[in-house]
Image (cartoon, rainbow, N blue to C red):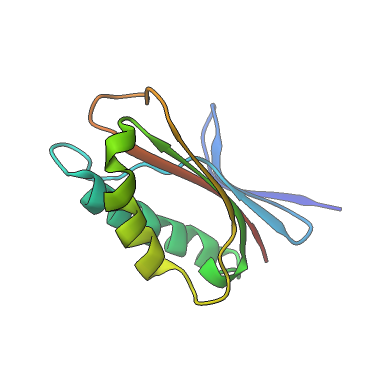
Length: 116
């Protein structure tokens, strides 16, 4: 079985496909500086849509999601965006935790695993 990698750098790939399973690296907002949690989440979910689309998948096929928040008090704000983004009846398994992220500009990070 082959492994396909996209948007690969020395440290990581943004997308790895093995068989019919798609793994995305943790995604952060491309325009994070000064953006509140809901805006960062919108940016992240747009990027997830793009990355999944590149490999023939989409949000209806997300199997699992992990959300990291710099401050758990942003939980309700990101869930409003998340709930609007989900396909009805296709909610993935999910975890959401508070964690210190790689940069103070990042207040949300999302990683997903999807079927192709």
